[in-house]
Amino acid sequence: MPVARKPRSAGFFNFDEHDLIEIARAYGLRTADAFYPILLDGETATLLEVRSATSRKAMIEDEGRRWFLKQIPWYAQDERQLDFSHAYQTAVHRTTGLAPAIRTTLDGAGRLSLRGGVFVLYEHVKGVRYTGAGAQLHGAGKALARLHSCAPSLDAAPGEDYPGLVADHLALADDAGGPAVRPLIDLLDAELKSAREELHRSGWEQLPQAAVHGDVNPWNLLFAEQGQVKAVLDFDNCDRGSRLRDVAEAVLTFGGLAYAQDSTSFARPFRCEIREERAARLIDGYRRATPDPFTEAELRCADAVLRTVFVELAALGVIKGELGAGDEGYLRQWLREAPPLSLWLQGGQDEEEARA
Image 1 (cartoon, rainbow, N blue to C red):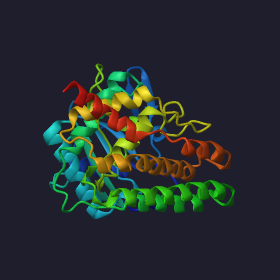
Image 2 (image 1 turned 60 degrees about the vertical axis):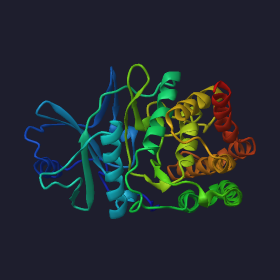
Image 3 (image 1 turned 180 degrees about the horizontal axis):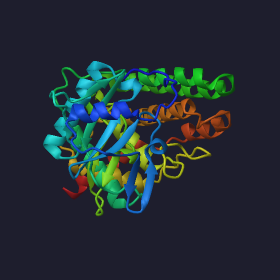
């Protein structure tokens, strides 16, 4: 996945009326006269540009059905990336029903290019948001395992050196944050180098490859009232790699990261206090749904992967202006006392073997 600075343009989140007319025509939307810039969950309404700062989005009503219109973010518009993202989401929809169906244009295309932007339209799935309930955590783990087991062909998938991708994010964070955050960037860079060496010694490059979602967080899953996942969203960051990346990110984002009210922005001050019972519920859900237990090599890599994902999330926080020089002390302490993902993963497997 390329790492690139967000483009600067006036009205970045606003749809031009002429664009909407052309989009409706391209997709054959006959009565699309309602474009909603909000998400609804019961009596809660959230402006889409508050929920996400990466691209333009809108809800569309047409002939009694709702659709979700999304502009692909600037960093995911590589043709190969777009092809694999479409193939992966389609495979997940067909085999599990966990991804919304993509609507094709009248020409049969899965995406629409319009004035330098790329748009996708897919069915709207009604569900509830993540609340921290144990049933939701268990459901999230099960859904993630099902995603990893229903990948399309990986031959054409963009493969990435994940630690290298994190290094690219750190470089962008250094550029965006300026001299004030240099000590924080140096801390994260040293941690990444240490984790990368540990991964190499542990056999990271030889781990089994899977289709990786690449952006597993509470905002990209919709739940039923009973806690099971109804839909997994946002396949923009998917690629080919180790499933540990998704598992580690899920543990961090569902189990510990604090967010600012109803947004994807980190809370201030930045905190990631992982509660072991939350991590255990999520991992148990994954373990019960996956046909492939974690290997010894994966267990050896798990702790370094967790720290690597944490570094990436911190770098993204700096890029977005949500972390600064004042967070260095907390980040240093967190990395020094990083939780044992490997023990949590192995603990679940030991319990299963004991029951057997």
